[in-house]
Structure formats: structure tokens, C-alpha cells
Length: 527
Image (cartoon, rainbow, N blue to C red):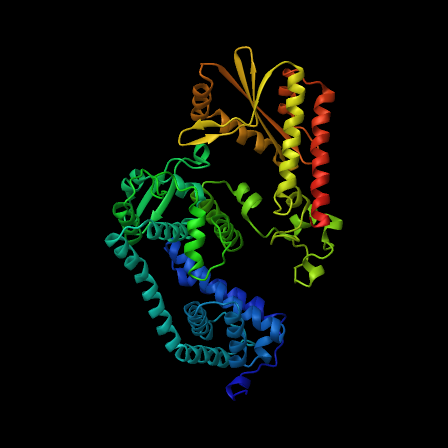
């Protein structure tokens, strides 16, 4: 039903697009909300407030057209918008934030000199009253939600108290699963950061000015490039961590351990078992959490904020775009997409009636591009391994012809983990470490540098000399080839120094191309 106020203030003026005018007012509203000397947190809050308010006006434009303020009943427009929010499974406190932000903007815009005549003061004030009415209606739901939050917050401390009284292994594994998932959501770090975290590092955690504790984990996947991984916890969260370590009956140097006190390599299983009891998907894993955090940052945050997040997650922005961000831009997808890759495989995705957005991969929620199919798609993982192994075997075959001593994929202990190069070649008084990688064409130089840094670090050199049992000179030769058969120049020159002919190098590149064709064929057949 449309009230009398819903039709008041209708203007006969017809501007080009009222959304553009409201967007300009929102920009001014955002700046004035920050103030002249705003902190980063206050600026971020103002940006989110403007973004949430703009979501309402974008919905109204889609529903009522470009002149929506002339035709929109404010009450009906707000109710339709709230229905969409509840359809996205947003919690009641988030919906309440939307209403608060819209109400503040309506108060600001009604008295603003920047407001055009088509955006009437009467409708703005009516929209404000509609927001206040909806907030009063959901007051009971908000109180119930807050009670649920308080009960949930007290559940974990009660589990720790029960664990202190009876430190059984089952409860310890459940606590480790819950805490590892919680820390992964807080920080977005890889699983190896949690697995390698030691009790000593937890005890030596630094303290910030606001009394948060920062745990520095030395051993992680990208320690050679980005240093220690930082895990920041509030005082309460840090107490959870220390209580679990102090109360457990297992003696271990690791924060997350097995029944024997070793590193908990099955932490993902504990995580899934514990979080499945909370109603979360069974297949949830640490990488999915990391992907969602980075994708959200890519869509919502500025470049400077994304750079800060990349440093906190111990990778660079190129790595984030390459491996973690789920949504690419339309231009990037257009330049690299396959003409035939948009047709669904028989009996798969759209062929079985499941909805799939245009240009989306048939297997995973990523843009369907040639680089995605050849390098990262879940469906082509096994056949990508086959491509890599065939190139390794071909290189070894040609090395045996030169009477070199070769070791394939040796496991070399390094610090508290290990390194595993594809091939180690022994020639006279030298070792040549060869690691073969088939990458996208634009990542040849980046992949070369990554391999050199990985196997050229002091820890890696010392580990290989200790493993070999003598002080030998060690050379590094990454064999970097693109999926389309382009050999990186320094790799080719290094292979020639080992006695490879031009024909040999062409054979290696051809092997990579054949593997890529097999990958594409596997993807299109839906195997």
C-alpha cells in the first residue's frame, strides 16, 4: 500500500540520471564524515557508509528507472532493498548498519545545498522515517542476535576450562581445529604458518600499543622473500592460545601438535571435523578462506590497502592476482579467453541444468581463460602434473646421454621442513640444481627469479651441502618454459652449457606444448 507521503514532493523536473547526482552527494557526505584529520579507520568507515547507502540507490535505479526519486514510493523502495539484503543471508546487525547509514545520509541530504530539486526534501525525510520504523521493528531480532553472539563467545572459554580439568586428546584436537580455523579467518595465512608455529614463538609474542599480541612465525613458505609471518591476536585470543598449550598433556615444541608431539600435518582434518559441527561446509579449507579474503580486498579496497594486505599475507600483488583473486576484469578475460571454451562440456555445468555465469569456468568459480585452464583449473590438476613429469623425464634422458650423475626429486632436509628440486646433477666438483616449471607466458622472468631465490638462499645452500656430505660449488638452473612452448633465454643458455643441442631444447619445448594440448583436451571433454 502506498501512503500519502509516498507521493509527496514529486517533481516535474527530469534530470539526466538522479543516481549520478546522489553519487556526487555521497562523495561529499563521505569527505565531511571523515573530518579534516581523520584516521585510516575513520576514513574506511566513511567509505563503507557511503558504499552501503549507494547500494540502496543503485537498487532503486534498477527497479524504478533513472528518475526513481520521481516515481519511487520510499517505503516500498526500502522494503524491496531490505528483502534483497535478507536474500543474501546477511545477519540482522549488518542490515541494521545499512539502515543507520541510509538514515544518516537522508538527514544530511535533506539540509544540503548541493541537493537538486528533483531529490525532494519530503521524500528524503520520509525515507529516514521508514528507516527508523524498520529499526524499531527489528529491535527484538537484534537483541536475540546479540544474545547468540554472547553465548557463542563464552562457548570457547568453557571448552578450555573443561580441557584444563580433563586434557584428553579428542578435546585437544577439537580445540586445535577450532582455533586454527579462527586464526585463518583472522589473518588469512597459509596452513604452513599454523603448522610451523612453535610454543616458543607464542611465548615471545610482541605487544602493540593497544595490547594486542603479535606472534612472529619464522618458518613459512615465503620466509626467504617476505620474512616472518605475523599473526595478530587480541589479549583474549592470545590467552586461548597459551591456555591450550599449557594445559595439554602432550609435550611438544609446536603450538599445534599430534599425540606424539610432532607437527600437526593433519591440521586440516581437525579443522574440518571441528567446524563441521558448527554447520559449515565439510570441504572448507584454509585456501578457500585465503581466496575469499584476497578476492574481497581486490573488489572492495584501494590499491594501497591491497598492498598492505599482500605484505601481511606474505606475497606480492601479482601473486594474489595470479592465484587467489576469483574475479578478473572483463578486459583481461576478453584478451585471454578461448573462443571455444564458452561452450559447456556435454553433461556438465549448464548441460546438467546448473546455472553458470557467462565466461565462468566449468569446474570452479573463476573466469574461463586459457591461462586458467593450462595453469590452475582444478579439473586439469592431474594432467598438469603429467605434463611436468614428462618434461622432467625428457630432460633426465638427455642428461644421461652426457654421462652425468642425476638424482630425480631428492628430498633434502632444510630447517624444519625440506626442499625437493626436480633434478640434481653431479658434474666433477659441482652440483647443478635444476627445477622445471611450465608457466604462463607472461611469468617467465618472475618464475626464474622465484626459483633462484628459493634454491639460492643460504639455508637452502647449507642444507644441500650437508645432505651431499661435502663442500661443493652449487649452481642453479631453473628450466622455465611457457605452456605454449617458449623457452626462457637464460634457461636455454644454461642447458647448452650442459651439452644440450638446439634440437634437444626444441624437443623439450615441444613436450610442453603436447602436454598443454592434452590439458586443454581434458578440460573440454570434462574428464
